[in-house]
Length: 262
Image 1 (cartoon, rainbow, N blue to C red):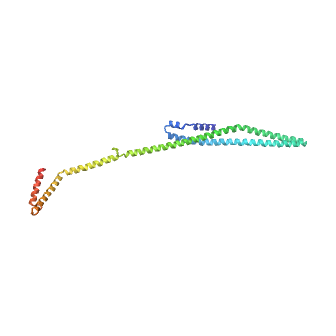
Image 2: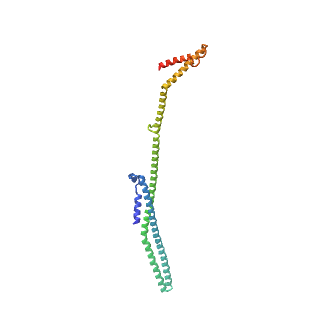
């Protein structure tokens, strides 16, 4: 009963349509892992059952061979006893002749018994041989399915890892896309532009302040005094001292003009 149960499971597993089962599975990888475990366990159990069945078959064959050998031995003994009886009978020794004929009959009886035992074992041997052949074939099929399952599982795992890696690379590239205005690089660039614009505004504001105008006025007065001194040198006169009347007058005139412009 146990052997039939194992044989039934082997036949069922060997005929399993792996692709169809995977199509129906919610999680193909988990299903493949479970199927690999099931096939591995069933193969180990089947191998034990096949080994036991083969052992039983070899015992039957040994007994059969022993019965055949015994039948041959008893046949030889019967022939030897019969010949001995014939020798005694030829000599006129009827008693010994009958004695060896009786021994020949006993040997023949045992020969027939061994032959009957051998003959009765033949159907069992044939049946067990058929079972062993089927179990071996089923075992080979299961091992082939296990190899197919393992290959599909490895392929699926590899594809899953590749897809995960591609997704990771895609996400990484997307996060550093400098053309994306919402990216960190875009925000940092916008911040720098705002800082630069602020500096330019501050510079423009400083240039238009009242202090800047006064600084420009002082520069203009100094330039006027330089021109006056140059004119005095060309006319042959002494160079007006810094703070002299001409320079002061000129500066006063410039200052009046500039203040009027203000």
